[in-house]
Image (cartoon, rainbow, N blue to C red; front, top):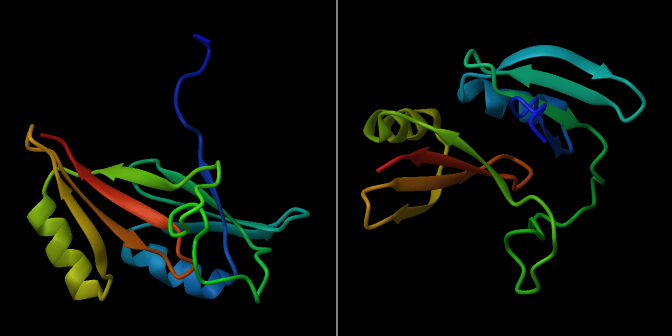
Length: 131
């Protein structure tokens, strides 16, 4: 459909606004509003225009495992968001200084490198450096 112009936002279900907000602020996201609406939702946006809606109704007793990534049975659904970067050494250094653990790194034959981190609810974020 040619009328689609870009991704407007990504929605992630989380347990705690305070914990989520603190984590994503480390990545440069700014708090916009929330909680608002019936779900409720909080919105954060990166200066590049990347917008994430945090749905604040995850069960407190939910498993720490993210079933879309960590279980042998692969469920349908979104598994991660990928943020493109232009300086992987600087991003890795920044994440290390911020106390954000890199959980996996993948290097492709074309020179592309991507690495993954987890937010406090186990949602996966990929930092993608093209080859």
